[in-house]
Length: 513
Image (cartoon, rainbow, N blue to C red):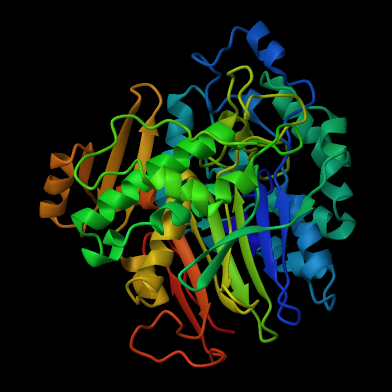
């Protein structure tokens, strides 16, 4: 599925990006994770960038070739099949459908066509251009137009036939190095050949009978858990009603606290010490919650003191009770827009998330993974290893906010998966240049609520409509049973009935098989 999405939605994902996976074993109840994010070139140091005249105040353009990190997605695809697959199909067989799709072509979906056009234009406005393999006659494909990508088909076939060496060594690797270096970036064959995924132990927190599982840093799953822990301290979250002024006010203030901590402390654990346990302590979230007033916004948000987008997401639950929560991304649309010759995919710009502030946990360094926005999630019973849901909401820094809003919609307000995704959302963003927070409210949230939030001191953008609603992310959910229903008594184990929802802000769908 990840490979097929790489073919059909290259403006969000692809072989040139990164991926993360959470897996629930239906037999044992064990949850395992794979971090498939790539590292910067060993030569990309802060001293090197400063020597080129860049600084924290004046970093490279987000689309610059210097922001290419090693693509981690292809290796993670291989590792997911090897570690979690049934072993009934070879990697070549698993990828054959995507290769055929690329070779024979597909009609471009409506939302994808819109994003394809917009991201190609964004590259052009920045003085860059999208590689010809991802255009038809020099232009982005239109809605319904059939798009073929024979170069990508060949790349997928080589990956299927040779595994990781088919991408990280040989023809494809050389083409990646060539296009990066020809455009002012830095990458070596050794950077690519030495890449591998990392099997990791997921992190979690409990909330009112459920346990939310995320991957550890360098991903921002920790931010979602921080947010949930802070919100646990506020009965006002439910009392005022869904998307009431009290509900949104508490949520926004908690997001500000959680994201401030995440942006301060998160980085590549191989390079810095991330205080995960201290940040996830309930006593810490209680301390942070005391900063929130119900009547007025916090004037300034500082990191707590401690002792010691674009993306695609999908989830699958099979007949054996196994679940896979999977996210794959090239970051900002096509990433850098650089397409290695005869390869058919664009290279990500994930390095744009590095800080150029010396001493910062996320400061750029050679062979380092940047702060990563893409996060898959799983939900289990808080007392036993019983799967309740696989879920994800993509959209850069919206992702932890989306995870928690969708989760609260089910846990607190009894919404089914589709209702939880349909409901209007809130997106809180921070502007580095102005030092201000902006609260975006989707259409469907009452004007009276927007006005009351303004009175409390929030900067409000309301209503957000049309294709601009993409900023609120795009989610998918599968639940095991109807544990979220407040009208159905929950006794014993949930039945083996799968419920699913797919976000109306995207081209996806929920499908049984």
